[in-house]
Length: 128
Image 1 (cartoon, rainbow, N blue to C red):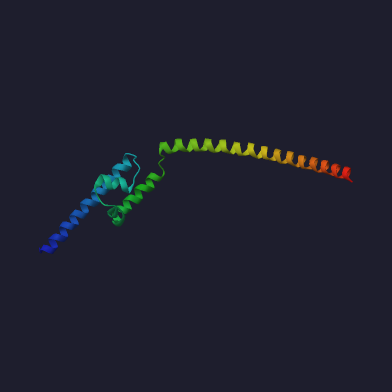
Image 2: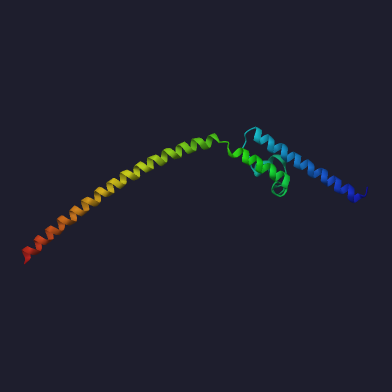
């Protein structure tokens, strides 16, 4: 075996070890219900961001795991959603109240304009 062949074999072995390391970490994160991210994988495996994006085998595992996690609900997110829904309901109520008040003020303004117009007409007639 030539030096070149040995180097190729060593590189292939190192690459396979990296792939296996990444796969193990992906599986572990999914099993523990932890949110999968490239950043966390980089920190835990010591592998580069490019490795996770460029390696088709690892990328396939990541995509599969992310699809699996898509159905999982983060409990913090559920609480935030409830809070946001409550706030949204309060804001809708406030909008309705303000719309009603606005309509009432428009009617009062119209009445005041008509009253002022009548008063102005009376004043003009007195001047003539």
